[in-house]
Image (cartoon, rainbow, N blue to C red; front, side):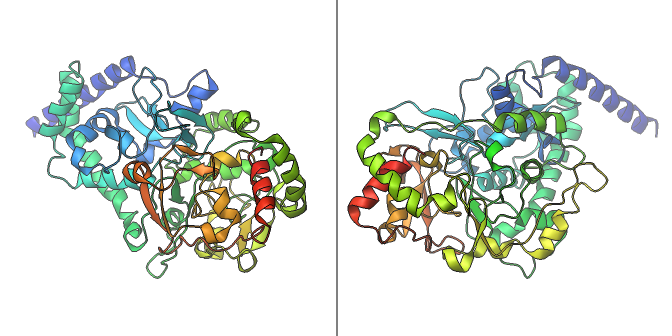
Length: 471
């Protein structure tokens, strides 16, 4: 009994000492500069899905064999982007100081992309762009694979941590050895039970996510007999002010920007109680007027674009221009003809459940609804939002306007731009080497539908394509 009390007392001292050490060396959870805050600040996901910092730091070293076979080192192989910031974490990861410092995810995980003009060009990091390279499902699977591996033990991980950080203290090491590593392993494996539904569906792949099936797990809406595929392309975050009052999400299931934002943060791992409302508000205010990057003007044929503008006004503006009669409204899936898996995945039961989240709080959700189609989106920054359609099944705008050019298979996550077809390079040896294969044969990945403009003659299509570069 006395020995047990002594050990308990020692661990309490260790915990307090480690907490002091961690806070003395930690980074902020919030940043004065809003762009840095967007990239690296916390929105409250660490409590539920956070990983202790030093474990997270060494996982790609200890378990390099569990990473996807993609270019880069460490977490780059999952799709995380580094921009040279001094703390060494990739964009989209947050840091929360506490008894044990933890790393979580934030808005930038899904909303920062990269573009290269040529294979030899430097990579441009674009804030608010769909994270075309990020594979969220691979990140989850990587953590699970690590936790299931026998090397996920105190001796192996602490040895790796001490190599990475020679200043890793004795007391902190004891805390990790006797408490943190086991709890982390158990927590990852417990969370893995909530993602077992992955195995019954095609892989999501980079730049895409199934947003609402995780909510069914959270709300205890059974997935035993629900095999729906809700995987969609990650959206952009630009110009949210003009989206106020429009129907949001791909299926138009909510028309309140702030509610949409909170649901995204909870989907990324926050809870109604851990959600950092102040941090979220800073991001929400910033993205109201965040502008997309302009297509390089020297690459636009102004005369041809002017000709295409008239076609756009006649064929497209009613559904895609701010103020258009159908912009932000929902077109029935049977009319637009695109893959309806995402529409069917979001059920009336789920909408009802979503409207219970935040009960007792002033921001409780109340705007979710069930629809039978897809929302008509504004087209700002269209050129940097490839691939196209709600499920990202069409690699470029040329193929979107000419359905006969839509490939059955292509490669996503290669960030070299295809200036001819207006999208990212999606075929050829470089795309195959650096990208991830996408098959339209998989359930939820059909590239059918949205054939508007398909009957235009070739010259008119070319002019329309030139104009779309200016959006």
